[in-house]
Amino acid sequence: MTIAVGTSVTLEVPASSANLGPGFDCVGLALGVWDQCTVRVTEAPGLVVEVSGSGADSVPRDESHLVVRTMVTTWQHLDVEPPAGLHLSATNAVPHGRGLGSSATAIVTGVAAAHALAVRGGALAGEELDLDVINSIAAALEGHPDNSSASVHGGATLSVTEAAEPLPRTRTVPLRLDPRVTPVVLVPETTLSTHTARAVLPEVVPLATAAANSARTGLLVHALTSAPELLVEATTDLLHQEPRRPSYPQSMELVDALRAAGCAATISGAGPSVLVLTDVGRLDEVRGIAAGTSAAWQVLTPGVPTDGVRLLG
Image 1 (cartoon, helix red, strand yellow):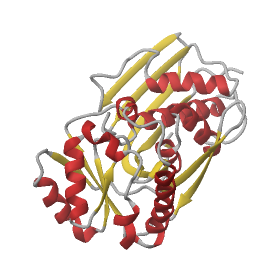
Image 2 (cartoon, one colour; image 1 turned 180 degrees about the vertical axis):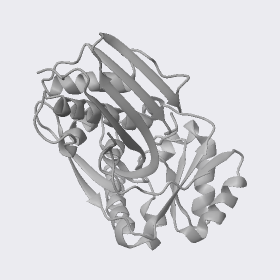
Image 3 (cartoon, helix red, strand yellow; image 1 turned 30 degrees about the vertical axis):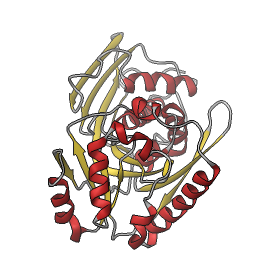
């Protein structure tokens, strides 16, 4: 099936923070920082990619652009013929390489745009945004569902992936975030790729460590939804942060200082940004602690959008 020439979609996708301490590869939190993208099927063959905002100086402008690659792969999974002509215009606000899910945001953008174009352009039946389909494809392409599922659904999410053919199926459940929880994101000037951050993780962990971290993840869900006073204890991680400490020493310095002051601080995703789950009354304290460390930090209070990917036109 082919997509009609002239079909276009405009959508936006939020950033995300993953893990939130012990919820490695399964817990995510959408953040109110949005990438926006317009994709149009053109009569003239070929690809045009325009990018502004974050990462504009470094991302490719050809078929290797992550949104484009994702769209092509998604059409293959949907048994839809990729169009011969395509124009993509992206405006990025999500910082690249800082643990705020920029790759997942791009992948969700690509999957959602490909699906919406296929439905709108007559190549596929159904809703333009089938979130279950988009969620599973995005998680499979990302390799884990934490960031991508939060960007698809918004809010706080808990996801598990089940083996299935031709793609694994990701089941995501929303977590009703307690209104007293305010996310603060502290973004450094330095960057760190997810690939580099994952390369230092151990392939095997002791059973006792895995069991203890699983218990922390259960406590994290409870704390996020109804008991934020437990968040400091619930965000204690035993799997990934300490092995990565040499990769982002200034971030861990800040995490240590915040936690010593009773703030629920964790590394955001693969880092090096730091996520603090606090209440509005402690924002000045968080800023003051960050100002007292050896690095400079951009302080964001982005809020948590209740929706994820949105069609704007």
